[in-house]
Length: 303
Image (cartoon, rainbow, N blue to C red; front, top):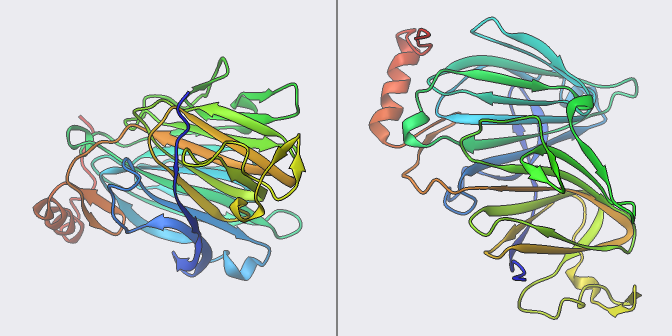
């Protein structure tokens, strides 16, 4: 067993996107090699409709895939290909922008005005940058949910885990996307293929992730299941944990338990040229995308 070291703990930072949506960004518009093949991760969570109701009006994407996971409220979406629909609580949409798409996403709160969801951007390799756009909309009931003997719950959104396979497939980054809840005080170890880059994002409760450079028991400042650990290693709400290489991730839930996303993918290791929602390999390709937008040739005909 090789425990992945914790390279970094990073708090998501408040920012504004779209037409004035208040959200928290865990990473994005940074060094793209850090979490290759992933480019950006946003946590859009709010109880005040004024902070999200203006939404994300029409905007372009090219060269990437966007993954939207809704936990509370809903998101109405539409695009230049005529697709439209609504994502509800627990639903997932995986959009392959490919050669280009114009779309909009308009969040709505639940009965209490609450809105919560995540959006992750995954890069596309050079040979798929100009592939035909497509959607995969997945309803909550289609997502496998595994309950372990100790009460740990894992929703398998993408990839295979504990004998279950998520409903989203055919993704270039070959990702694994898990929504994991661990009861208070429990310690769990999860397998992550060695070749993948991986991160965790805590959004409820708190936890500590064992570091390969420390004894695996050093996680809390008091006895938890008979092991002496250190409170300073605990991470809470809106914390990104970036891991190094290895094949296991060990996590100790805090006193109130923890819920987090565990995401990993195969690195693409190609040059990245980036302009907002358009991600290509060269600046010339970015300039061509801008010309296409100006000339109304951004949307390519289906072959």
